[in-house]
Length: 387
Image (cartoon, rainbow, N blue to C red; front, side, top):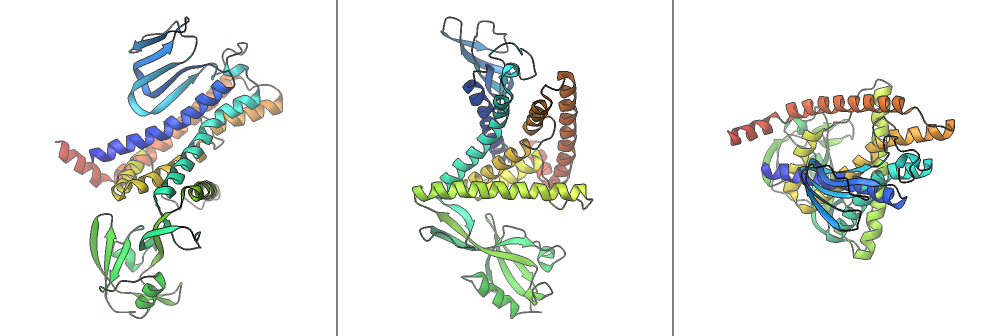
């Protein structure tokens, strides 16, 4: 369990650090002073910087630095990503040329959007590297003929609510190793076998992570398909790898496809909330993501890379949503400034961002409470191990 926590902190740190690095790089590109760029969150452990004479200096603890015309690079005590402190990010120093507030609207918009872009780039790099090593992927829909495929499996990709599969405890991601000791090379063969055994109890051998489970399930006629089944959707999957020159293209293409899929999913989620259809997706907060990270890490390094890439794209999409306190909300205020030919009053914008941040924190607390209730067994195990 300690390893799960360490891996979660490492994944979160990579995502947040990449995001802040995007802001930092574009601020420097446009001549805006980045007063401090830190790994982790304060309090500061130590930092280094160039003084007014151009000599490198080191500082320990949170001592105020008065002789740094550039950026302080710091390592901080809380290892949760990083931060960048940009001069004028809250509207001050409008007449100073190295202040964020003094830059044109288009430059400020690019600086604010750079974190989102960096998260997309990080996901792209991870997916490209993954395709070079071999990534788990569905084998349906046609693959490039030059793809190399190994470790073929038949996996469960959906479990219908109220079905016999759900009653038996089957989960998304489970691998069907065999049925009645019969192994199948394709899902058509498996479906044909199940269809011929309606009403008879079958013994499913299931692989879940490092566990092997035996599940007795009796198939029934499914009204959705008119065939025998247990209430699951299955897919052939395998570890897919490409030569490096193809992995680059496949990684870029897959990143944009995943980004569009995630944007569409958020759209459907918001549409459901606005029109009173409820939330059909299962939301996860920090606790839920930590638990999922541990589960994915146990599957192997490439699975963790793939999961990190998905989280990075999710972070990008969420951050660019036009909601106060998020990067997208700040860009929205720049659009308003451009339209009305003048900035919104700093006090008004600050109040709106603070309210937005408070609402986000309330949402995080609600989702975290649900996660704690959902994973209560896991926390009980941690508590018992410690005490």
